[in-house]
Image (cartoon, rainbow, N blue to C red):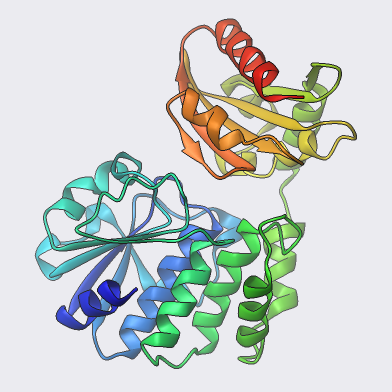
Length: 316
């Protein structure tokens, strides 16, 4: 933390980056840090590779970000990445990151410490670390910053229902509540609203769940044709794995999504005792004990067989 504080004090203008296809924690952490740096009298912008998911778009955040192809790298003298465990996950923004003095802030224990300055600490969300950082910088938490912190910690904690929710998580939530941000409106948009296509995709995902290992392993596969036929968007896939994880008796839930021919994104979740971070690591990925992921290439049936064998070695 001290190194991050020094890093921010030593520079005047910052590009803030997130991983490809950012989720609520990545976006919220980036927005909160951006506002905090702005409130210090310095310059900061969040640089994204594409527009955020619709459910995570709020008018208060729109002035804070620009798309990568719109920016001039010379406008910044330092770069900070948030919620990104490895350099390749920055995708097309990697070149910008390595071209400047850089800092890596993340809560994934699988983080590879790829920055010149690294602050990696396990927490419910990277947003928790950003809130602590802003507090140590003596930055006033305005309403927009509070909204961003809420989006970060609520999405990565399952709206404060996942096992990663701690006293610190709730204490952070309590403190930002004092800022009077529109909690009900935000929670409804983030967690309750969805398109007809997204609703049809949920039905398709549930229909395709297959159970193995005496019902302890639940696996569902969504192909590109499923997105086309339901009219859903890629961003609608984010919460699908919960419908497998929530089935009684399931310890490991796996969501396999086709990215392109013979290339699949695999998400893992566990309920009680299995370290799915270790399972993901076996396949070249990583993450947390109860939430992790990886990319796998090959025939889908071979991939499913590999997942089944891995699950068998981790289940009691």
